[in-house]
Length: 160
View 1 (cartoon, helix red, strand yellow):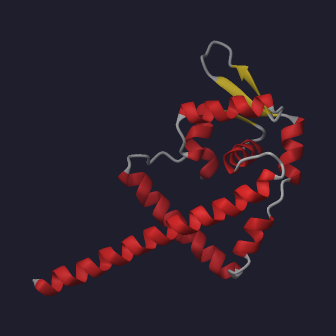
View 2 (view 1 turned 90 degrees about the horizontal axis):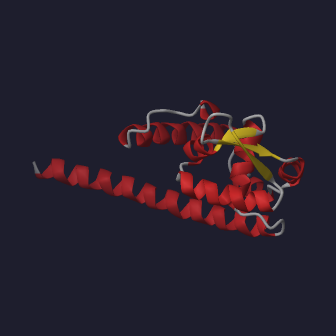
C-alpha cells in the first residue's frame, strides 16, 4: 500500500511540475509578445482577436470569439469596443437579434498582415518541425481533456 501511495505522489508531483512549467512558459512567451506588439499599440489579446477574425473570414460574433478565446463575453465586448475605437473592427447588429457581428476593417486586416511575429518564431525555432508536430499533438490532448473535465466538450468550428 505504501508503495502505491509513493508512486502516485510522484506522478502527481510530476504532473504538477509540468503544469507549473506550462504556466511559466506561457507567461514568458506572452511577455515577449507584449513587448513586440507594443510597437504597434496592440495587446496580445487584441492580436488574438484579429487572428480569430482572419481565420473566420473576417466576421464573427462576440460569442464565437469568447468561445474560441475562452474569455468571458464581457471581456471580449470591452476588447472589441477598444478595437473599434482604433478602427480595427466594426460592430453591426444582427437583424432580429441582440447579437452583433464583428468584422475586421481594412486597417485591422493590414495591421494583422504586417504584425511582427519575430518573438514567436525565435522562441519556437528551438524546436524541430517534428518536435512542433508532437508538441501540438500533446497540447491538443491536454486541451481535449481539460474541455471534457470543465464540461466544454463543444469545440467551436474554427478550432476543429
